[in-house]
Length: 419
Image 1 (cartoon, rainbow, N blue to C red):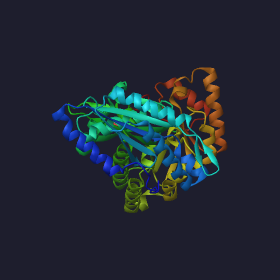
Image 2: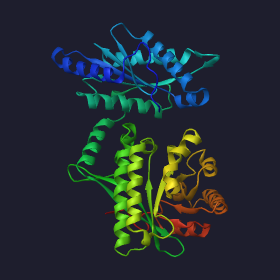
Image 3: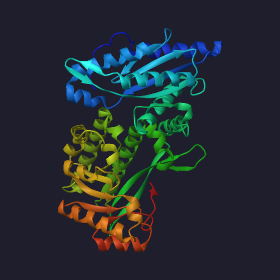
Image 4: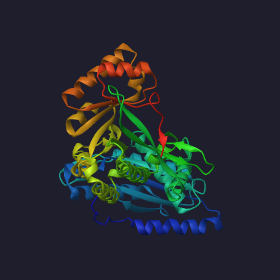
């Protein structure tokens, strides 16, 4: 998001951060609690797209005014960046801050914003955390507010969430994730993808794994929800992509066959252009180092889900453009899991269609089989290669092959194998 005009009546992010640091420095001695409220205007991007950046700045100012008018005399409102604001509430427990968050939320939701000749209605989502119960230092406290805000967004927006009331404490897992990334304890397991007609291995999917402090191997299902809440998925994506590119070069240099290497990426990665550019630069060097071995089609395939593409189509297309411009192919993962799947097929240059796992597991059901047959016919018309995941027995593999599905993966063929 471009830098926005300075807002009246609110302090900057740097000043807000300094205020939080000061509160943390003085609260232990006085045993005085304080709380943070982080809120984000819902779907603010649509305001900018529909009315322009200048009108968007006016909406930010109006929301800031509403928030400031709701706060008490000793509270502080800061512009945290973009469409986000941070409130610092001294002498306040988290539950009290939650009541304040709800007061601000309801005020924003019910007061129309008048901008020039336009009347705009907006809402906001809120994350609330308190010292000391939700964090004893800046990083933990901000992670808690981030997690609570993200949970509010995921729960439907226009609501407030308390960090302490989340079903689990994602920032504890977040600390472990950060530690694993720093200490090179994040690894990649690769699950082979099989051609159902020839039985040959034609590709593999890269899957993140963490080696815990006590030596356990944690699968993505154990930590991905926390990573999403804390917006750490781009760091996982970066590690997996770099390791997979290295593996691809090693295999080709050792005389291995050219195959497709599938890698999931998150919407969070797509919003970190510097990381994307780093990965594309590395991919370019990797391709140059073994150009004569690759052939006409680049081996890397970027998997995206409908969840990651949710939002306006032009923005999603722009976010994926660096990958497609480089020549990487796209796969739509979990096809059939959401209402917009068919719409995305018409809007993006997909090469592969990965059918949603719950449908694959139920292929013995005649109704489900008919649905998947319809998906296969659409894929054939669009010249897409179809892939089924979660194939766990020979019966499912045979049904999938008879329907016309091209490729498959699952424990029937092989579990994911650590590199």
